[in-house]
Image 1 (cartoon, one colour):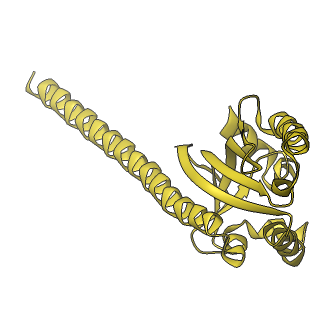
Image 2 (cartoon, helix red, strand yellow):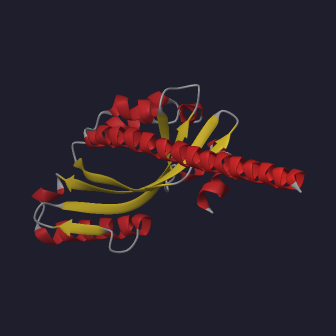
Image 3 (cartoon, helix red, strand yellow):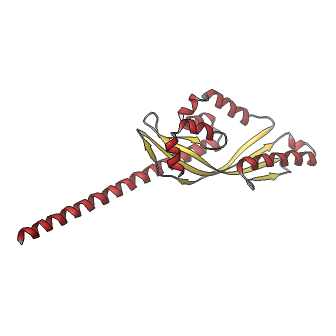
Amino acid sequence: MVLRQKNTFNQIKKMKALHITLFALLISLGSVAQTDKESIQKWADIYMVYVQNNDIDKILDAMLPQLFETISRSQIKASMEQMLNNSNMKVEYLSAKINSISNTVKRDDTKYALVNYDSSFKMIFLTEAEKPLDKRKEMLDYFKTAMEAQFGKDSTTINYDEASVSVKSVTNMYAVSSPEFTGWKFLNDDNNMGTLAKTIIPEDVISALKN
């Protein structure tokens, strides 16, 4: 009888130890997930400041390096400089705000997450401002239709007096952490970069992040 009680007591101790271990493991996993999200938030906030400041070199530094294996860094830089230095149009980034960050998915030594964020920007058409109002409206209305086709209905606002179009968008981007670089790097998953992202981010990772 004493032996049986002792065995029962030992079993209870083992069960308690197992529960404590599992609880500690869950706490640890939750802490790692929270730490990843906090780190992604920090690096993403920095990236968005670069975008708002039109700091091209730092924007490129924050992008996932594998992108430049498909399109050279110099090509992307030249395109961005052409857009920002366009004498006919001025681009102003108004705001950016992160809505959500997914849990990370790990493959080998690399971690991936999906970041959903709002952003808004304004395009001021400098030469259009000099044209008569009817001509200005015709061009801006056409451009509004094109922007809504890309970013969704009601995403675009026109200021005819300023000859500007403001666009609000909700977009995803991938955040990637690897031993090959410091911190988190980013790759947009939008109309322009979405196709490229599918050739860089593993298919099973994309599926896991989006489902």
